[in-house]
Length: 314
Image (cartoon, rainbow, N blue to C red; front, side, top):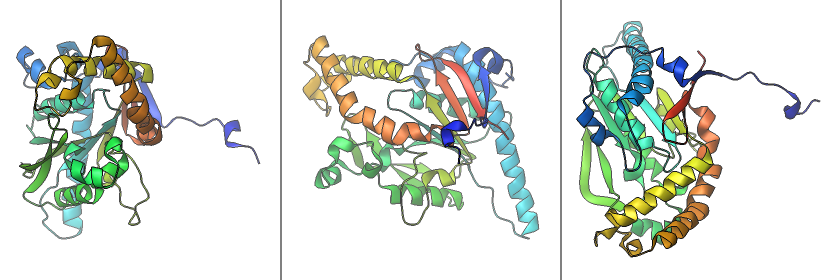
């Protein structure tokens, strides 16, 4: 029997360079204003109008095709089953490493999709709120594994997605504070029947060994993986840590205030240590293996801008 390594597999993805992808561009009926950019990108993640026009507008129009087909199938299913069920949200999952820029991708996509001709209602949820509270992580002795699959209340996340996909009129979501580095006890976000729901988090494409065999990604109608070379992600993570040390960590209420008085050299060493001990193992064990489960991969270059797009063939 020939070994797997002896076979040549045809890729299930179409590959587009940035130049090829941007030629697929369409026109939105409403333009994004320059002042919107500051609200859309995260710390140390540059965002330009060119990036939105070249990458996200074509992506929005591709997703518009999928959303239309999803809604049409729902309508035809209603006819077939002689029912009159209300339309359900189209759910998009966004995955990728810590510091790769998922949050910026999610916010920009939320904005651009909301500007499509039919003006869909688009909501964004991050999975941070579904982490176990710190006191539970400490009880389980896994506080240093926050972000690993076992640190999430997967049952609660699955129930949230099931409620959304069943057409429940209002579903509440727990919120997470990066300042407190913990789930908030009382604050919640209420999701009320969106046309499109974006779910962003490092864990959303992971497959674990749950006995019931139900995974977060089972609820997705489309999935995106934000990718970059590891050396770039490490560099971005260290730069972000240093920027936070000089800003947010200075707040005495910050969980990470203990790092506020580090020198630049100490800050670099600490960030590299955290990466090597926590984020790198999580990337290689749990996140990176899910990359090719996505329907679309956005590959970034060293400056945080998309240089290549891979789209699963249909």
